[in-house]
Image 1 (cartoon, rainbow, N blue to C red):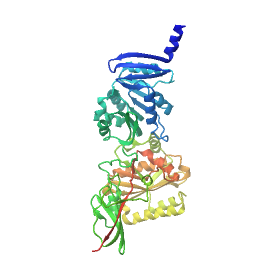
Image 2: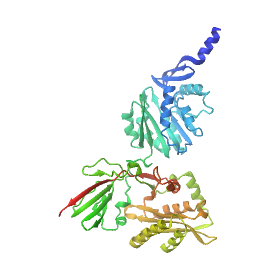
Image 3: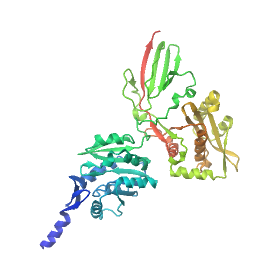
Image 4: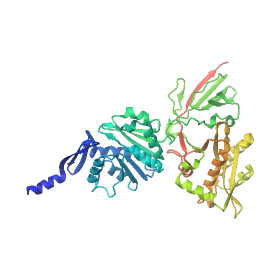
Length: 485
């Protein structure tokens, strides 16, 4: 009877101590049937760890389909069940350097998981180097590597953080647990990743990171990036301001409107009369003396634009789907792509039925304006079905070589070609043709975000297959001046 009671008691309550050369003394405790693993005075598994990662995983937007997860630090397996619950179909890989801790995790998670994660038993840096050489990518990376309360020295290494950047998918999430070491580690991570959210759970401080250019206001821009609004070709009329912050002025007798789109604060040149001056930064800048925030527009209502870097192997950043269609287009025998006149382009575009008539004619007026002012910088391409001799898709772009940028202006595709590779062929040709001109950045225009019309979603989804860097504009500033000269 006593033996039976003892067995029942041990089923729900027991404490075990295991020594590990890497982690020292590990305490494994079972309390009311639930396991807790404690090493170095910190929970590695248990209700605390479960609640912590449950809170963090909620930060991943449900619209992102997570297929691969990498866990740095298995601990006592506390986070695995939550990851599996959140992403039931994902392939999970865990890196753990302590075989004793790995065995403990396997033992206590045996009755909770049908499939234990793929396990890599080695130092985290060695594992990451191997994953980089294999060109592996992950939608979510969870970093929780500690020795007791002290973070692994790897978290202070720029080389290690760089490896994390290489294996994180372009739309991926990096979840980092700092415990109480946020101030010392976060500055290093901030050089490689954009911080999207800070999370607090009791004693722990955590952050959600993503790659720069995923649509976070305030993300830094590449050093060689310059917006088209600083192009004298784009500005057309005589620009005002100084190099680095050029603008435009439209005057009406004694009233004028000026606007500038740049991070540098505009230099205001005296002008006789009443002026409304609008300044739109590209990244977030601190409030400036003498300027007012645009109170009519909320931050989240501002536009989000997408840019693709036109590198030599530009397609490497494309989605798998886009790469596949690019190859299909290269082997296609049914369609032919050709350069078109503006008259030919207009005829095919207006007949496409895309958008309503007023919008179509409005876009064509913009195209004719560019054609009149700088036709040499206008590229018009049509795709023809060789069997029917009918133009079934087209793309119009405007080049601004003085700022090494090209802008997507008009595109269309007929219903009969929607499920072909024609659209990908046009985009691929855009990359190729602009490379010959030394164009570094392709401006895909507006990309849908929450708050925009749902009708923008479909084409935005198409655009985002081409490795776009998203720039979300902050609210603009304005000031009113009156000068009497």
